[in-house]
Length: 114
Length: 116
Image (cartoon, rainbow over all chains, first blue to last red; front, side, top):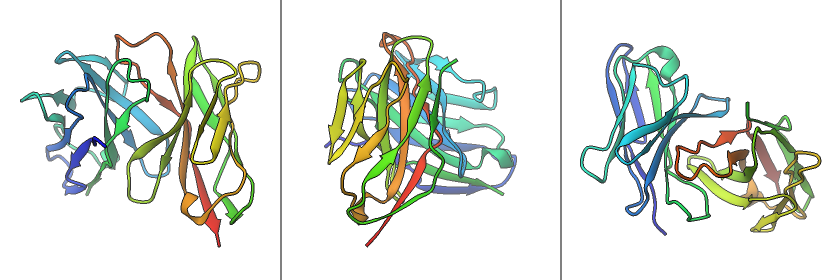
């Protein structure tokens, strides 16, 4: 069964550093998402991406965040200057319109900011 | 706005016990409803879904019925197994947003532990 692949599975970074989280969505999917889950809290929507542009973003997704689909297969989330409160599990998801089966999520990247 | 509320956890059961995890929602439109499961160390997997009132989603012995009158989508299983131990998330997506970034709104998640 097709999978959404995320790398790395765990990243530790120092406060103020830039991080890039990588995702390879399912190849024929058209919509791409990032969600995050702070330990013990809800899974929260960050951003959706369709037709090479952001289609929706949450209030969490401020100027520190950016997304890109640089080569037609990878989908990246960049955090420009990490803060302690960015520590969370970040999930990538993709979706094919009319698939009817919901989103396919990756297994996540655990980001720890120290 | 849209929101999902799940029963507080964690839930601990013995094998073969009956499971109910409550989920209620508020939505401004006509949502589709989902249950996702997260096994230890893994991502979110779709467990079941329902797209309109009175639909029943089912998978792997789990069931949930979309109740518009009570705005609920409770998850049930008649006989749980140790392998069902995971975190369960209720979620909604508004119907009709296929052409936009149709976000999922999640509940808090319920940790289920099943003991042998």
